[in-house]
Image (cartoon, chains in turn green, yellow):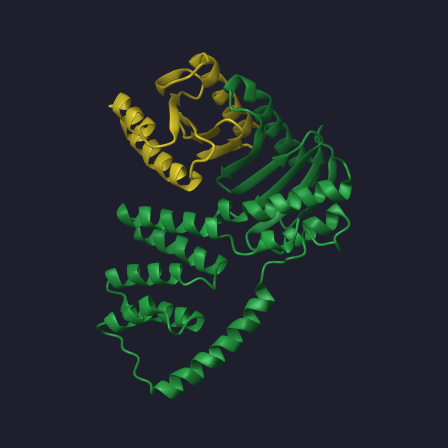
Length: 249
Length: 111
């Protein structure tokens, strides 16, 4: 698979924004803000989540917060009509600097942001030609924010490889998760759901994503607050790369 | 009323059927079409839920989402019941999870 698959996922962004809208409709403003902050982190070059987040702040009378968000959006596109209109609509906060000074600051902030973005960008090497072992795939996967462990086991639950950032026993954890995944997989006929592709477990202490093939179970552990949908593509990519490097299917 | 709560869940676009099951696998409420025996489905869901809570020593609430070829299955396990829905595989999973959280809260209050 190419590096293309690791670019910001616009579909995930749409889901995040739709969900945030739903939260707003139901009065869950803090939850909506959290989602939009995640959307910004994952898609920092797309203006839509910035404008949505700023609108929530404005509706709650938090204009200073809104202004900070809008200022960040201007770094992406200083000409954006909606962002400029929103800034213009702020009642209590008005940009008071001279235009030249603002441009200068924008330029400096943009350079700093680009440097930070390069340093913190998701690894785009999971599926590259240079990756030749499951261990490398897992190591790259763990560079992604929110992923705290990954375990590969075979179809009987025996450990193939693992990388964990938390103090749990990798062999038994892999075997337990694999056995639960298998139970779901073998129950699919009773449930009439067809072939099981992915299973997500959202547990009190964190989340687990499991992808399986006939001979492999690919298990990814994440922190609790991460949005699983946002990790789906990268986990899929790591799974297929693992199959490729192991040469099993 | 439980019956109405379940009907509201099944009325959501993309949801085929909804089960409220006790932790032992007995159906508390059900709505929606199914070609299979509902008691087999409820027992299977309860068994998956029990396996996870036992094997991983989980006492609190948890959720399982199964994305499969024909249907997706969402299971929300609460202290005294399990809420499960079968959906269209193309459905927006975020939206369903949100609706199920709301539904599970209402069912908890009802029970």
